[in-house]
Image (tube, rainbow, N blue to C red; front, side, top):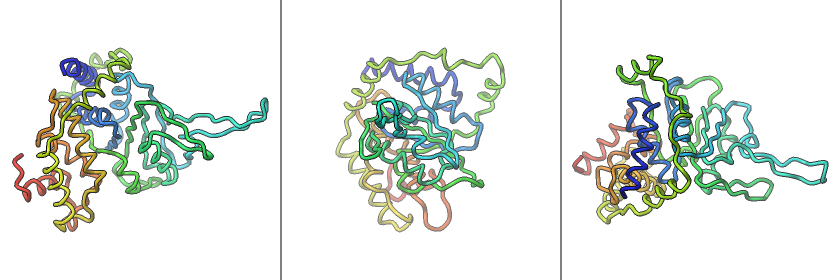
Length: 305
């Protein structure tokens, strides 16, 4: 656990040299990676979404690839394509940018639903199929997608099946006054390339540490109470699915590991719950923020926060 703690402190420390004043968002991003899930960042342009992805990829020492989603982007532009080689009179598969350990799907809602769906098999099964042939993706495989929350011409809604592939979502928001002052000062600028990167064996050590985090029966009881409330209270269009429940536990395990614990406690569940429910629970009636939804759940279930 001590070795894992040192590695996590290194990741957080190095990343926050570039991403100032966003400790929780950095931890949530790391939680998604540690749990083998994927992340959606929904925010306005210019607040550091792409910079966070590039920085985290470098610090983790992962092969990084970025796809700028546009309205004319095709699935083959992401996955790859078979081409005919006249020299040997046979077809060869040219891999697309999805064959990387860390994929940034930038402005994902600018592509059509057909192109967005090209990520579904990859995100769920860590493989892609082209012309009946299956190709395994690198390990680890981690996707961060960004999305502009404002409705604009040329954007498409993400289908619920696509949204559900993302374990959690958050917004970076504007920096604090102090952090923004540091950003504005030229001497603050830190080169991402100058940051220390993890080695492959260190990634394996982190994964081993994550696998050792224990989830008690009490935590399972709490999770099922939350599920039951979202499904039976009549406050939401649909309740949380079994996949959402597993995601909640996976992210909570990673959150516990980041806190240097090998067991999950109720506060881990409650800390990450708003980011799990943000894109999954839609309140009936007036629109509610993720925090308001979680407050509603905890108050009705009498959970001590």
